[in-house]
Structures are given as structure tokens and as C-alpha cells.
Length: 368
Ligand code: FES
Figure 1 (cartoon, rainbow, N blue to C red):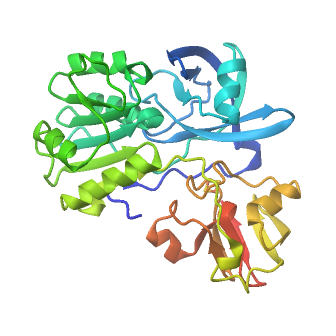
Figure 2: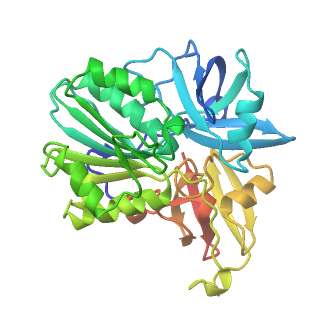
């Protein structure tokens, strides 16, 4: 994906001694029946982050260390502390474990904030963000909304927010307050799957007719200073993307945060590289140490390293977050998923070890 306003995210911390922080849980807010916000106290050694970035939580569950990435819903320009908002997912390991077990006063191990769904705020900017959020996809949007309203007095935000029903709307009241406090600068339009009888707003699937009618209520939606942001279920984002495409919105103005805990499930027998995908040795240089890792045909480089207890950085394990990014300085690597990397990163030889497989015997990857 090409990034315009939005920049490639912060680099990770690089030495193993400071890769992780332990954060104190200061407050747990029940947002809806199935969503909580975890507020972490800013440590003395302040953690800086940009709106739109995510935090990777590392939690021991049933004797195994589980990592999951959650977008920060707080804004560093508004909120004293850091917060992530988590919605239960059916069968989700951490999204159910935390609401059931976490208590105020606990500490959680986290990785530094990461992610590229970010922008630099500037008081001189005069721009319009049109956001499409679905369910818990509101979390990075909330952070961006707060930062925009406070840091760019001349910028405005229009949020199209899709939810199952009224009770599942995360931050409903907070958004209403912001709309009132920043009158004319934040415009929230709710779309519900399952609307009550007296619902005055929109309901049903976001389609061409609905978007046309929504855009009649959104000023200047097609101008050059408008940026379109989306975060939510994959289906919703694909739909919104193709609708914007149908309105000739340039792709460079559309940015999405894909936060599906993806399962790369491709049939290896149909892989165009199936003949090259054999067991190979890969060299990974991380933290000044060189590791030789034997990678089996169906395993990723990261999986193989973790199996050998080599502590490489990672988060989503789905090729989306770039926590495992490294530069391939020798040999050839095949990626199951390239979404997380920009074209220029791919051209420069960057790879993601969580979805990377060696195609030659001389692969050397430098991380950090
Ligand atoms: S761990 Fe997220 S891209 Fe590899």
C-alpha cells in the first residue's frame, strides 16, 4: 500500500533489554456488554505513541505466552494514560481472557506501540478525515478523532460508524460529547444492522445508495484535502473501498487498518513456488546475534525461530503489523502476505518473518 499523509510507523525498540514494558492497569471501563477499555498508567519512562498505533499485549494464558495487538483508543495529546479497547470475539483467546480475569492493579507486559495507520498532526493543517469504522474498528479512529480535534483547529472529522445494534456502539456517549464540544468539527453518522423501530438513522448494509445519501450530509467529501480512513471487519472495508472506487476517489487518499487476527490458510500444493519450498537454513541477525534457523517447508521463518526458543520480535503473526519486519540482505524470501509492507519497503528487500519462507539456501535477514 502506498502511504501519503500516513507514514510508516515508528521503529521498534532494538535491544532485548528494552523491548518490553510492564504497565500497571489503572482502570477497566466496561464500554458495552462485550467491550472493555483497559487504561494503563503511563510509566515514569513515558511511552510515546501516535494516534492510530497499536499496543501488543503479552499475556500468559494456560501456560502459554499469547500476544495480541490492540489499537490504542487514547490520544497522547489528550489523555494522560494509555488505553486499549477490547471487544470479545467468539472463541477469541485473549479477548475473552482479559475481561474475565484482568483486575485493576495487575501489570501487563506490552511491546512498544507500533503501526503505520498514523499521521503527523499540525496546527496549520486544514483537512477533512472521513472515517469508516465497524465495531471495535472505532478504537484507532477514536484516538485520531481526539488528536485532530485538539491539535488541528481547522480540520474536521466525519465518522460513519457501523454496528450491530445500539447497545453494541462503543464510545457512544463519548462521541456525543465530542460532537457537542466541537460543534461543526465532528459529525458522527451511525449505521445499524439491527435498528429499533424508532431509529432515525441509517440501517442495513452500507451500499451505493446509502453512501450517496450519507455523502449528501458530509461537506466537501470529494476534495483534495479529504482523507478516507477505514477500520473494521474485512467485508465492511472491502465494501467501503469499492464504493469509494466507484466514486473515483483516488486510492492514495484511502487508508485502512486491517486488524483481522488473520489465519494464513493457503493450499501449499497450489503455491507457484511449491518446488522451491523445501527445508532450508536461514540466517537471522537480531540484536547483534546471528541465529541459524532450520525452516521446514510449511513453517514460517518466525515459527521456526520460536520453536527453537529464539526470541525474535513479533505481534500479529499475520503479516499485518510489521513487528517482525527485517531486511533480506541475501537470498530470496517468499511472503504469504504483503499487505503490511509498502511498495518501497518491498523494493528495498524488507520481509516479514511471520509470513516469510526461504526460497534459496543463502537467505540472510537483518532485524532492527
Ligand atoms: S508479526 Fe505482525 S507482521 Fe509479522
